[in-house]
Amino acid sequence: MKKLTSVLTAATLCASALAAMPITASAADTVYGTMQIPYADFFKAEFEGAANADVEVDAVSSATANKWSGNQTGSVGEDGVWKSGGLSAGTYCEANPEGGGTILGVVYPVAVSSDDVEYLTSAYGFTALDAQPAAYKEVTVANGKISVGKLVDTDGAKDIGGDVKVQTQTNYGDYQLEVANYPQDADVYGAIVKTADGNFYGMRALENLWRPKGEIAWSVGYVTTTHGNNIDNPDYYPTNGATVTEVTFFTLDGYRTVTTNAYLPVIFTKDVTVESGKSGDGSVTFDNSKFPADFAQSASVADGFSVSGNTVTYTGAQPGSYTLTVSDTNGKYADVRGTFTLATADIPVKYQDGKLVAADGFTEADAANFLKNITAVTVGDATYKTGRRGTTVIDAATGEVLFDAKSGETAVFDGSGNYTITVQSTGYSTDYTFSTAQETTAETTATTAATTSTTAGTTTTAAKTTAGTTTTAASGGSPKTGDASAMPIAAAAAAAAMLGAAAVCKKRD
Image (cartoon, rainbow, N blue to C red):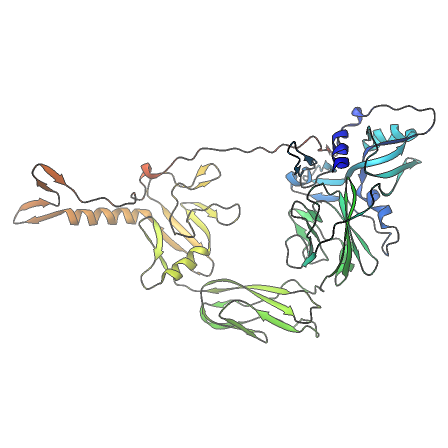
């Protein structure tokens, strides 16, 4: 880590060309520095000897600004702990006129001839270092074109060991590798996945590398977009059914490599179509007519479900969404999944005392199932989605209506106390609509009837006076719906994201 830290201290990876010190020499000398290296040039020499050595690694386009431009590098803090950089740490990029941006390559240490410094400074942002880095690439210039060599690792490649797991159900692509010892103490400038058939595959920020968890993912034509990126690249299609033998990472202190024997099960489809049905007892079917002839089917859903052939049978199933997983017991093919819904027209909840509770004739389990499946709540004319980045208007655990809920900095409820609320829940074909005004009216009527009675023309109140002391009925433990005094005021908070000094993003004409 000392060498890595010294390089980070010595080099401002994304400094402008004006920051470079002019160098003169009577004869060509080797000069160390950093420069912007396009992905195609960075990986080209690393592919020497590969069966697909002629493949050119492309730049990465992305529509998500805080990701493609988040290229600030990590560093070691005063406490000696590594603090990671941005999602695309160590890269350089440019904004696209139509929106989004493109990650063009990486800013990496190099060794160049002093004769080429002026050109490389102007064209590739070369910035001199004050010492030889632990790892670098040799760069030469001929007729205005650069040639970038393999990584020179002064300490030799490091075998990081550890398991490599394969996933085929992921939002990042069709295949995802999870490397147990993915570098967590350094920025990763790229990686190469090698397969038993002799092919090499270059892995780049955002399209393939997802820090900080260390996922490496790519598409073979099924999952084609992720997080605003188009990841459908035919160069990766040959990995379908291949075996990964090695994964190599590029860091500032050189290669970090793990050897493995990770089989990538054949993907022939990502989804299986399952019909929807009614909750309770019943069965649904799914389409397995296009499964390969040698696919040895084994399928499962959840407790209370059984699968035979293409039929799913169930008993006592609650309304909601379910997932069917179909596996190949021979292990040749990847799992296939399909979601389906079991529905009912029944509404198992009612509004009472500021919350949704089990309706008459339904159990607490029925009510809890409705609550956990809520997908959206409409208050007046505004609809609020639940889930990640959504707005919680009704507590899924308790059923409580959160009258202090906010969507961003905007209050969901206006404080009037009278609201019409509609709840949508997966598996329930009828939305549940209720009004908080109904409860207020009912409470008022009940209170009036309980406290006032007329007998023989004499009005008697429930309050009794004894020895000068007045006793009244105790109020409930919960404030009445719509009581503005029961609504806490939340303080507003704002967050701002800043790009680090390492960001090199220019506006493309």
